[in-house]
Amino acid sequence: MAQARLTIDLAALRANWRSLADMAQAEAGAVVKADAYGLGLSQVAPALAAEGARRFFVAIAEEGAELRRILGPGPEICVFSGHMAGDAGLIRDAQLTPMINSIDQMLRHVESLPGHGFGIQLDSGMNRLGMEPAEWSALRDIALSQHPALIMSHLACADEPDHPMNARQLQAFRQMTDGIEAPRSLSATGGVLLGPDFHFEVTRPGIGVYGGLPFVDARPVAFVDLPVIQVRDVEPGETVGYGNTWTAERPTRVATVAAGYADGILRTMSHKAHLWAGETRCEVLGRISMDLIGVDVTAVAETPESLELLGRHQSVDTLADWAGSIGYEILTSLGARYARTYTGA
Image: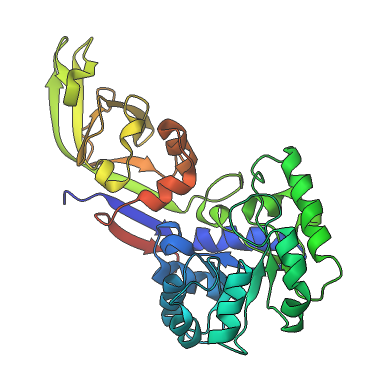
């Protein structure tokens, strides 16, 4: 079968969520936006619900409606983008909790869905989503009288524990929310790792659940194996791949594997990435193309049927370093062509 394989370990995913949940004396939600970071909402969300997650976070109302279809009634589903124009039907029918980001959104929500629950998102300094302090001051009393389900903000630099922005945002969030009765949330994975001052009543584990940094103790969740289509002998002076960017300096056994940038193996990994044949590290040769990658298997005793890209030997963050990116992009870029298998259900 010339199809790359993506295996998702749901037992590892649940263990990662449990570890992050147990780090805080708070309720732990679960972030499952972008199709559960590319790993499959229909499989990941029920696994997290079975582990104990009762509050989920998605990016947009359409994701929330799909999640409600998967999970059924009960769990709370918070929508980061808030109440956008045209969302009222989805919010009502799927019983979603929009995280209101502005006075305009608040007006839209109370006018179109009076009495429907909501949360509040505050801007504590990231300047991305949420009400700024002046806007919150104008709306605070009205909003609190409606008993919001959650008041949250988001840290910009939580992956860097010593960054001064963390303390500034914590102070700003406290100034805007101290003394209120609604549960508060400031921390995703990075914030959980910053310690109790950042935990408040609800945490929002995300990337760490899926095996990514900054949760260094995360168990690997995603495993990618690429099938070998063909192996050839390349003589010194011959080249491999588009643009002749790699030239053999010695006799080389080159395997061509069935995957490429159409599968989320980013072209910027060219000349940096490695695959694994058992315990043998194999260099990627030349440019990564849409569907094919050349790999040096000279040191491999027997012709391998497949080579490991992601899993036991290298993480999503290893791949991200090669691509000049972050683990989030690697996971969410994994394409639809993989033969997906779920284990540990």
